Length: 122
Image (cartoon, rainbow, N blue to C red; front, side):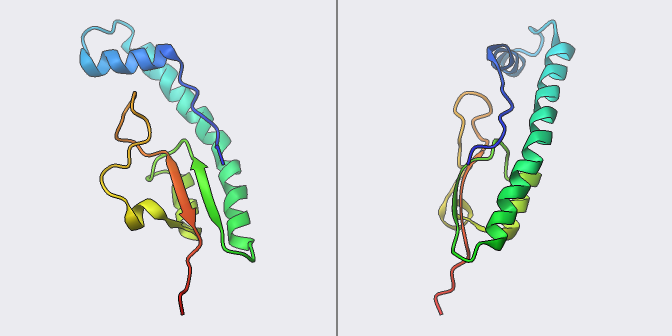
């Protein structure tokens, strides 16, 4: 799966780098922040029905489910919580650290996931 992207452009990455490295450098702080928040909100609204369809599929599947992909959302998001209610997160079971997905902007965020159905061994 690949859910709706925030679609950050070069200007967004530059803004985040500038504000992170030198907060006084960016003259358009308010405009840059508003642009990023709008993109995040738009993507969030588009991801919601996408993830609800996927969660419904996982919930109703008569077979074990292995689901991998890019949620474009973090482990504290609605998308993640919805899937986590239906499936097991392999990183939680066997990973360590932050589980970094993106090395450029906010490298500590995990937005790519592998989920699986709970499997009973007995």
